Length: 165
Image (cartoon, rainbow, N blue to C red; front, side):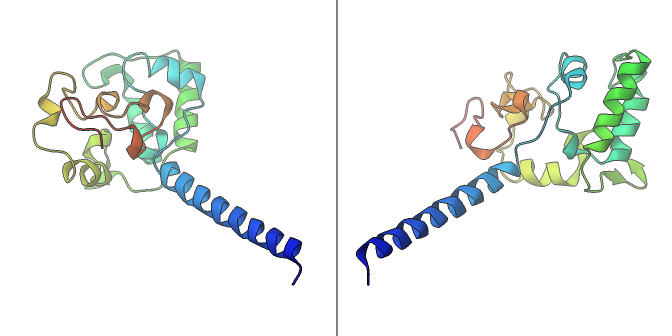
């Protein structure tokens, strides 16, 4: 056989293997990296708390959250009508497909969803949410160092008072 042709085949196989590995790694991280590309959402919602990824709630849950901004978890988060419509439309268009309701009512808290509970309750030691730096599981940025960018990948987790994961 031609040594040049063998070298080219070998190089092609390495390239395919590298591309496959890179795709697998990005697909895994992509499962925990979310788009936060709406400026109004990041500005308005992100000014009080982390701008939660829309995929973490289904459209009915986001609709209920946006319709109740006058009593948003104890605060009045009312927005100008045009801004509220823009954000609500974007949230619903980018919402998750997983059902986020209980007893026929949309859940308003991401931390109340079965997915969130499964992801966090089994892997996080008891009492983490009571640490002063964390305070609550709703404070995503306390442990997820890339939360402000929509990055919730495992490599970016740093639990205050704990070990890096």
